[in-house]
Image (cartoon, rainbow, N blue to C red):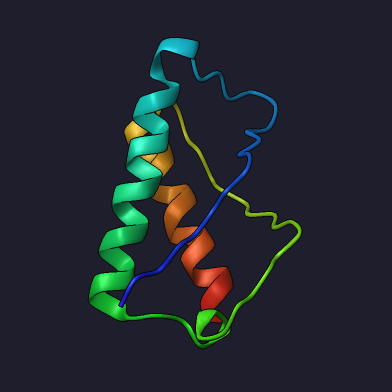
Length: 85
């Protein structure tokens, strides 16, 4: 089964600075973690048909210095959780 998931933009809130040079790391982490979750946990029911979400807000609790890789994984996990509701 092929799943096409398009995320146009990820907006990181105030207080989180992702340097331009690390944005690809964040993007790759989101993609890899979503792929892992879809493989391990399966496709959420909300995505079994053609489905469009105009926007989604996820809240992350970031403490201290957090790597773009870790932020990307947290974003992907939050997205998957929202889709699985």
